[in-house]
Length: 387
Image 1 (cartoon, one colour):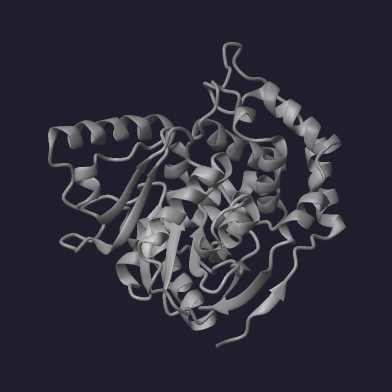
Image 2 (cartoon, one colour; image 1 turned 90 degrees about the vertical axis):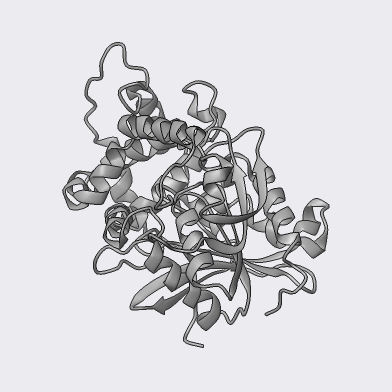
Protein backbone atom coordinates (compact mmCIF):
# COMPACT_ATOMS: atom_id res chain seq x y z
CA UNK A 1 0.00 0.00 0.00
CA UNK A 2 1.49 3.32 -1.06
CA UNK A 3 1.76 6.33 1.22
CA UNK A 4 -1.38 7.91 2.69
CA UNK A 5 -0.83 11.12 4.64
CA UNK A 6 -3.20 12.82 7.08
CA UNK A 7 -4.47 16.15 5.81
CA UNK A 8 -5.90 19.18 7.61
CA UNK A 9 -7.67 22.05 5.88
CA UNK A 10 -5.83 25.22 6.92
CA UNK A 11 -6.15 28.06 4.44
CA UNK A 12 -3.62 30.91 4.84
CA UNK A 13 -4.99 34.22 6.12
CA UNK A 14 -3.59 36.04 3.09
CA UNK A 15 -5.69 33.86 0.77
CA UNK A 16 -8.85 34.75 2.68
CA UNK A 17 -7.93 38.44 2.73
CA UNK A 18 -7.41 38.42 -1.05
CA UNK A 19 -10.84 36.86 -1.61
CA UNK A 20 -12.66 39.27 0.71
CA UNK A 21 -10.89 42.28 -0.80
CA UNK A 22 -11.97 41.18 -4.28
CA UNK A 23 -15.58 40.78 -3.15
CA UNK A 24 -15.56 44.16 -1.39
CA UNK A 25 -14.19 45.96 -4.46
CA UNK A 26 -16.58 44.40 -6.96
CA UNK A 27 -18.23 46.97 -9.22
CA UNK A 28 -21.91 46.20 -9.62
CA UNK A 29 -23.64 46.59 -12.96
CA UNK A 30 -27.17 46.50 -14.35
CA UNK A 31 -29.67 43.76 -15.12
CA UNK A 32 -32.92 43.89 -17.13
CA UNK A 33 -35.75 45.58 -15.25
CA UNK A 34 -38.03 42.55 -15.71
CA UNK A 35 -35.26 40.16 -14.73
CA UNK A 36 -35.92 38.19 -11.58
CA UNK A 37 -33.84 35.06 -12.19
CA UNK A 38 -34.92 34.58 -15.80
CA UNK A 39 -31.74 36.11 -17.25
CA UNK A 40 -29.46 34.33 -14.76
CA UNK A 41 -28.40 34.98 -11.19
CA UNK A 42 -30.45 37.81 -9.72
CA UNK A 43 -28.55 41.06 -9.09
CA UNK A 44 -30.32 42.06 -5.89
CA UNK A 45 -29.82 38.62 -4.41
CA UNK A 46 -26.12 38.73 -5.28
CA UNK A 47 -25.75 42.09 -3.53
CA UNK A 48 -27.45 40.71 -0.42
CA UNK A 49 -25.38 37.52 -0.63
CA UNK A 50 -22.08 39.38 -0.88
CA UNK A 51 -23.00 41.66 2.02
CA UNK A 52 -23.55 38.57 4.14
CA UNK A 53 -20.31 37.08 2.80
CA UNK A 54 -18.31 40.10 3.95
CA UNK A 55 -20.09 40.88 7.21
CA UNK A 56 -21.32 37.56 8.65
CA UNK A 57 -19.89 34.46 7.03
CA UNK A 58 -16.87 32.94 8.80
CA UNK A 59 -14.74 30.52 6.78
CA UNK A 60 -12.79 29.44 9.87
CA UNK A 61 -15.98 28.14 11.50
CA UNK A 62 -16.76 25.96 8.51
CA UNK A 63 -13.15 24.92 8.09
CA UNK A 64 -13.35 23.58 11.65
CA UNK A 65 -16.61 21.77 10.88
CA UNK A 66 -15.05 20.08 7.84
CA UNK A 67 -11.95 19.17 9.85
CA UNK A 68 -14.00 17.18 12.35
CA UNK A 69 -13.87 14.41 9.74
CA UNK A 70 -10.66 12.48 9.06
CA UNK A 71 -8.94 13.82 5.94
CA UNK A 72 -6.11 12.25 3.95
CA UNK A 73 -4.17 12.61 0.71
CA UNK A 74 -2.44 10.03 -1.45
CA UNK A 75 -0.89 10.14 -4.91
CA UNK A 76 -2.50 8.13 -7.70
CA UNK A 77 -1.39 8.39 -11.33
CA UNK A 78 0.64 11.49 -10.50
CA UNK A 79 -2.28 13.36 -8.88
CA UNK A 80 -2.67 14.04 -5.16
CA UNK A 81 -6.12 12.72 -4.24
CA UNK A 82 -7.77 14.19 -1.17
CA UNK A 83 -10.41 12.13 0.60
CA UNK A 84 -12.39 11.97 3.80
CA UNK A 85 -12.23 8.51 5.40
CA UNK A 86 -14.72 8.12 8.22
CA UNK A 87 -14.66 4.58 9.58
CA UNK A 88 -18.01 3.25 10.63
CA UNK A 89 -19.28 1.93 13.92
CA UNK A 90 -19.98 -1.69 14.74
CA UNK A 91 -18.35 -4.96 13.67
CA UNK A 92 -19.00 -4.92 9.91
CA UNK A 93 -19.25 -1.44 8.37
CA UNK A 94 -19.62 -1.62 4.60
CA UNK A 95 -17.14 0.44 2.54
CA UNK A 96 -19.02 3.21 0.70
CA UNK A 97 -17.37 5.53 -1.83
CA UNK A 98 -19.39 8.73 -2.35
CA UNK A 99 -18.48 11.07 -5.22
CA UNK A 100 -19.62 14.65 -5.72
CA UNK A 101 -20.01 16.54 -8.97
CA UNK A 102 -19.86 20.06 -10.41
CA UNK A 103 -20.42 22.67 -9.06
CA UNK A 104 -20.19 20.76 -5.81
CA UNK A 105 -17.52 19.58 -3.40
CA UNK A 106 -17.08 17.34 -0.37
CA UNK A 107 -18.98 19.95 1.64
CA UNK A 108 -22.14 18.52 0.04
CA UNK A 109 -21.71 15.48 2.28
CA UNK A 110 -21.42 17.32 5.58
CA UNK A 111 -24.89 16.17 6.72
CA UNK A 112 -24.71 12.55 5.55
CA UNK A 113 -21.24 11.32 6.54
CA UNK A 114 -21.97 10.91 10.25
CA UNK A 115 -25.38 9.20 9.90
CA UNK A 116 -23.93 6.83 7.31
CA UNK A 117 -20.86 5.99 9.41
CA UNK A 118 -22.53 6.05 12.82
CA UNK A 119 -26.27 5.33 12.48
CA UNK A 120 -26.60 4.47 16.16
CA UNK A 121 -25.95 8.11 17.08
CA UNK A 122 -29.32 9.03 15.58
CA UNK A 123 -31.18 6.03 16.97
CA UNK A 124 -30.74 3.76 13.96
CA UNK A 125 -29.31 0.25 13.60
CA UNK A 126 -25.53 0.08 14.04
CA UNK A 127 -25.51 -2.81 11.55
CA UNK A 128 -26.33 -0.27 8.82
CA UNK A 129 -22.98 1.48 9.28
CA UNK A 130 -20.51 2.30 6.51
CA UNK A 131 -16.87 3.15 6.21
CA UNK A 132 -17.44 6.39 4.28
CA UNK A 133 -14.83 7.44 1.73
CA UNK A 134 -15.53 10.85 0.14
CA UNK A 135 -12.84 12.06 -2.28
CA UNK A 136 -12.45 15.46 -3.88
CA UNK A 137 -12.49 14.80 -7.63
CA UNK A 138 -9.14 15.37 -9.38
CA UNK A 139 -8.92 19.08 -10.19
CA UNK A 140 -11.53 19.92 -7.56
CA UNK A 141 -11.08 21.35 -4.08
CA UNK A 142 -8.35 19.82 -1.97
CA UNK A 143 -7.22 17.26 -4.57
CA UNK A 144 -4.36 17.97 -6.91
CA UNK A 145 -4.79 19.18 -10.47
CA UNK A 146 -4.26 16.97 -13.51
CA UNK A 147 -1.93 18.25 -16.22
CA UNK A 148 -4.76 18.15 -18.75
CA UNK A 149 -8.48 17.30 -18.68
CA UNK A 150 -9.63 13.85 -17.58
CA UNK A 151 -13.18 12.55 -17.57
CA UNK A 152 -15.34 10.38 -15.31
CA UNK A 153 -14.14 7.08 -16.79
CA UNK A 154 -10.52 7.90 -15.90
CA UNK A 155 -11.57 9.22 -12.49
CA UNK A 156 -13.38 5.93 -11.83
CA UNK A 157 -10.10 4.11 -12.49
CA UNK A 158 -8.32 6.42 -10.02
CA UNK A 159 -11.00 5.89 -7.38
CA UNK A 160 -10.89 2.12 -7.92
CA UNK A 161 -7.18 2.30 -7.14
CA UNK A 162 -7.91 4.42 -4.06
CA UNK A 163 -10.34 1.83 -2.73
CA UNK A 164 -8.36 -1.34 -3.46
CA UNK A 165 -4.67 -0.46 -3.79
CA UNK A 166 -4.50 2.33 -1.21
CA UNK A 167 -7.23 1.47 1.32
CA UNK A 168 -7.23 -2.29 0.82
CA UNK A 169 -10.98 -2.82 0.38
CA UNK A 170 -11.79 -6.08 -1.42
CA UNK A 171 -15.43 -5.07 -1.85
CA UNK A 172 -17.30 -1.76 -1.72
CA UNK A 173 -20.29 0.08 -3.12
CA UNK A 174 -20.23 3.45 -4.86
CA UNK A 175 -22.73 6.30 -4.70
CA UNK A 176 -23.03 9.62 -6.48
CA UNK A 177 -25.09 12.29 -8.17
CA UNK A 178 -24.05 14.56 -11.04
CA UNK A 179 -20.50 13.55 -12.05
CA UNK A 180 -20.56 11.14 -9.13
CA UNK A 181 -23.26 9.15 -10.91
CA UNK A 182 -21.11 8.85 -14.04
CA UNK A 183 -18.06 7.87 -11.96
CA UNK A 184 -20.14 5.31 -10.06
CA UNK A 185 -21.47 3.95 -13.36
CA UNK A 186 -17.96 3.34 -14.68
CA UNK A 187 -16.95 1.78 -11.37
CA UNK A 188 -19.85 -0.67 -11.66
CA UNK A 189 -19.17 -1.30 -15.35
CA UNK A 190 -15.37 -1.68 -15.41
CA UNK A 191 -14.30 -2.29 -11.81
CA UNK A 192 -16.68 -5.01 -10.62
CA UNK A 193 -15.62 -6.78 -8.58
CA UNK A 194 -14.45 -5.24 -6.20
CA UNK A 195 -17.24 -2.66 -6.82
CA UNK A 196 -20.27 -4.79 -6.00
CA UNK A 197 -23.07 -2.28 -6.38
CA UNK A 198 -23.82 1.36 -7.16
CA UNK A 199 -26.44 3.84 -5.97
CA UNK A 200 -27.07 6.95 -8.07
CA UNK A 201 -29.34 9.97 -7.73
CA UNK A 202 -28.89 11.30 -11.26
CA UNK A 203 -29.07 9.55 -14.60
CA UNK A 204 -25.93 10.95 -16.21
CA UNK A 205 -25.38 8.26 -18.86
CA UNK A 206 -27.19 7.44 -22.10
CA UNK A 207 -27.81 4.26 -24.06
CA UNK A 208 -26.12 4.01 -27.45
CA UNK A 209 -29.29 2.65 -29.01
CA UNK A 210 -31.30 5.74 -28.12
CA UNK A 211 -35.00 5.87 -27.18
CA UNK A 212 -37.12 2.97 -28.46
CA UNK A 213 -40.71 3.62 -27.34
CA UNK A 214 -43.09 6.55 -27.60
CA UNK A 215 -42.64 7.25 -23.88
CA UNK A 216 -38.85 7.23 -24.27
CA UNK A 217 -39.05 9.49 -27.34
CA UNK A 218 -41.17 11.97 -25.39
CA UNK A 219 -38.58 11.96 -22.58
CA UNK A 220 -35.74 12.48 -25.07
CA UNK A 221 -37.49 15.47 -26.65
CA UNK A 222 -38.07 17.01 -23.21
CA UNK A 223 -34.39 16.60 -22.30
CA UNK A 224 -33.38 18.28 -25.58
CA UNK A 225 -35.62 21.25 -24.74
CA UNK A 226 -34.10 21.52 -21.26
CA UNK A 227 -30.56 21.42 -22.62
CA UNK A 228 -31.40 24.08 -25.19
CA UNK A 229 -32.43 26.35 -22.31
CA UNK A 230 -30.02 25.36 -19.53
CA UNK A 231 -26.81 23.86 -20.96
CA UNK A 232 -24.80 26.91 -22.07
CA UNK A 233 -22.40 26.30 -19.16
CA UNK A 234 -21.95 22.70 -20.33
CA UNK A 235 -21.13 23.66 -23.90
CA UNK A 236 -18.61 26.28 -22.75
CA UNK A 237 -16.89 24.03 -20.23
CA UNK A 238 -16.72 21.05 -22.58
CA UNK A 239 -15.29 23.03 -25.51
CA UNK A 240 -13.43 26.20 -24.38
CA UNK A 241 -12.92 26.03 -20.61
CA UNK A 242 -9.69 28.00 -20.71
CA UNK A 243 -11.41 31.07 -22.15
CA UNK A 244 -13.92 31.05 -19.31
CA UNK A 245 -11.16 30.67 -16.73
CA UNK A 246 -9.58 34.11 -17.21
CA UNK A 247 -12.67 35.96 -16.02
CA UNK A 248 -13.65 33.48 -13.33
CA UNK A 249 -10.26 33.03 -11.72
CA UNK A 250 -10.10 36.82 -11.25
CA UNK A 251 -13.58 37.22 -9.74
CA UNK A 252 -14.91 35.54 -6.59
CA UNK A 253 -18.25 37.23 -7.25
CA UNK A 254 -18.24 35.82 -10.79
CA UNK A 255 -17.60 32.29 -9.50
CA UNK A 256 -20.31 32.70 -6.86
CA UNK A 257 -22.87 33.87 -9.42
CA UNK A 258 -21.96 31.06 -11.84
CA UNK A 259 -22.46 28.44 -9.10
CA UNK A 260 -25.48 30.00 -7.36
CA UNK A 261 -27.48 29.99 -10.58
CA UNK A 262 -27.11 26.20 -10.75
CA UNK A 263 -28.10 25.70 -7.12
CA UNK A 264 -31.20 27.81 -7.71
CA UNK A 265 -32.23 26.23 -11.01
CA UNK A 266 -31.45 22.62 -10.18
CA UNK A 267 -32.97 22.45 -6.69
CA UNK A 268 -36.40 21.93 -5.18
CA UNK A 269 -36.93 25.54 -4.15
CA UNK A 270 -40.07 27.51 -3.40
CA UNK A 271 -40.15 29.58 -6.57
CA UNK A 272 -36.81 31.38 -6.86
CA UNK A 273 -36.19 31.41 -3.13
CA UNK A 274 -32.86 29.59 -3.13
CA UNK A 275 -32.76 29.81 0.65
CA UNK A 276 -35.85 27.63 0.90
CA UNK A 277 -33.41 24.81 0.05
CA UNK A 278 -30.05 26.04 1.42
CA UNK A 279 -28.60 28.47 3.89
CA UNK A 280 -26.17 31.13 2.77
CA UNK A 281 -23.49 29.39 4.83
CA UNK A 282 -23.99 26.13 2.93
CA UNK A 283 -23.75 27.93 -0.40
CA UNK A 284 -20.73 29.96 0.66
CA UNK A 285 -18.74 27.04 2.06
CA UNK A 286 -19.06 25.19 -1.23
CA UNK A 287 -18.13 28.34 -3.20
CA UNK A 288 -15.22 29.08 -0.89
CA UNK A 289 -13.73 25.65 -1.48
CA UNK A 290 -13.37 26.55 -5.16
CA UNK A 291 -11.87 29.91 -4.22
CA UNK A 292 -9.43 28.96 -1.46
CA UNK A 293 -8.02 26.12 -3.57
CA UNK A 294 -8.00 28.06 -6.85
CA UNK A 295 -9.71 25.12 -8.52
CA UNK A 296 -12.58 26.63 -10.52
CA UNK A 297 -10.59 26.35 -13.74
CA UNK A 298 -9.43 22.75 -13.41
CA UNK A 299 -12.83 21.64 -12.07
CA UNK A 300 -14.43 22.64 -15.38
CA UNK A 301 -12.01 20.39 -17.28
CA UNK A 302 -14.03 17.28 -16.46
CA UNK A 303 -16.55 18.37 -19.11
CA UNK A 304 -13.81 18.48 -21.74
CA UNK A 305 -12.45 15.20 -20.45
CA UNK A 306 -15.78 13.44 -20.84
CA UNK A 307 -16.09 14.67 -24.43
CA UNK A 308 -12.66 13.21 -25.19
CA UNK A 309 -13.70 9.93 -23.57
CA UNK A 310 -16.66 9.67 -25.93
CA UNK A 311 -19.40 11.62 -24.21
CA UNK A 312 -22.24 10.41 -22.01
CA UNK A 313 -23.22 7.33 -24.06
CA UNK A 314 -22.24 3.87 -22.93
CA UNK A 315 -20.05 2.10 -25.54
CA UNK A 316 -22.05 0.92 -28.55
CA UNK A 317 -22.94 -2.74 -28.20
CA UNK A 318 -21.82 -2.78 -24.57
CA UNK A 319 -23.30 -4.85 -21.84
CA UNK A 320 -25.24 -2.97 -19.19
CA UNK A 321 -23.97 -2.33 -15.67
CA UNK A 322 -24.69 -5.74 -14.16
CA UNK A 323 -23.91 -5.10 -10.49
CA UNK A 324 -27.01 -4.17 -8.47
CA UNK A 325 -28.00 -0.55 -9.06
CA UNK A 326 -30.10 1.64 -6.81
CA UNK A 327 -31.84 4.60 -8.45
CA UNK A 328 -33.02 7.49 -6.25
CA UNK A 329 -35.29 9.74 -8.32
CA UNK A 330 -35.68 13.19 -6.81
CA UNK A 331 -38.56 15.11 -8.48
CA UNK A 332 -36.80 18.46 -9.00
CA UNK A 333 -33.74 16.94 -10.72
CA UNK A 334 -33.21 19.36 -13.59
CA UNK A 335 -32.64 16.58 -16.13
CA UNK A 336 -35.55 14.19 -15.56
CA UNK A 337 -34.92 10.48 -15.33
CA UNK A 338 -35.75 8.41 -18.38
CA UNK A 339 -38.58 5.86 -18.23
CA UNK A 340 -37.55 2.75 -16.37
CA UNK A 341 -37.59 0.73 -19.60
CA UNK A 342 -34.75 2.89 -20.93
CA UNK A 343 -32.80 2.94 -17.65
CA UNK A 344 -32.89 -0.86 -17.43
CA UNK A 345 -31.06 -1.15 -20.76
CA UNK A 346 -28.11 0.60 -19.05
CA UNK A 347 -28.41 -0.65 -15.46
CA UNK A 348 -29.38 -3.77 -13.53
CA UNK A 349 -31.91 -1.94 -11.37
CA UNK A 350 -32.43 -3.56 -7.98
CA UNK A 351 -34.02 -0.58 -6.23
CA UNK A 352 -36.15 2.18 -7.80
CA UNK A 353 -37.09 4.92 -5.32
CA UNK A 354 -39.27 7.87 -6.34
CA UNK A 355 -38.71 10.53 -3.70
CA UNK A 356 -41.41 12.90 -2.41
CA UNK A 357 -39.23 16.00 -2.73
CA UNK A 358 -35.69 17.17 -3.46
CA UNK A 359 -33.56 18.01 -6.44
CA UNK A 360 -30.10 17.73 -7.91
CA UNK A 361 -28.00 18.24 -4.76
CA UNK A 362 -29.74 15.50 -2.78
CA UNK A 363 -27.12 15.14 -0.04
CA UNK A 364 -27.59 18.81 0.86
CA UNK A 365 -31.31 19.19 0.16
CA UNK A 366 -32.70 15.96 1.56
CA UNK A 367 -29.94 14.22 3.51
CA UNK A 368 -32.29 12.00 5.52
CA UNK A 369 -34.08 10.68 2.43
CA UNK A 370 -30.81 9.96 0.69
CA UNK A 371 -29.21 8.27 3.71
CA UNK A 372 -32.18 5.97 4.28
CA UNK A 373 -32.29 4.98 0.61
CA UNK A 374 -28.56 4.16 0.58
CA UNK A 375 -29.04 2.05 3.72
CA UNK A 376 -32.01 0.19 2.22
CA UNK A 377 -30.14 -0.47 -1.02
CA UNK A 378 -27.06 -1.73 0.82
CA UNK A 379 -28.95 -4.17 3.04
CA UNK A 380 -29.52 -6.52 0.11
CA UNK A 381 -25.82 -6.83 -0.68
CA UNK A 382 -24.30 -6.25 2.74
CA UNK A 383 -24.12 -9.80 4.17
CA UNK A 384 -21.12 -10.99 2.09
CA UNK A 385 -19.14 -7.75 2.40
CA UNK A 386 -15.68 -8.02 3.89
CA UNK A 387 -12.47 -6.04 4.02
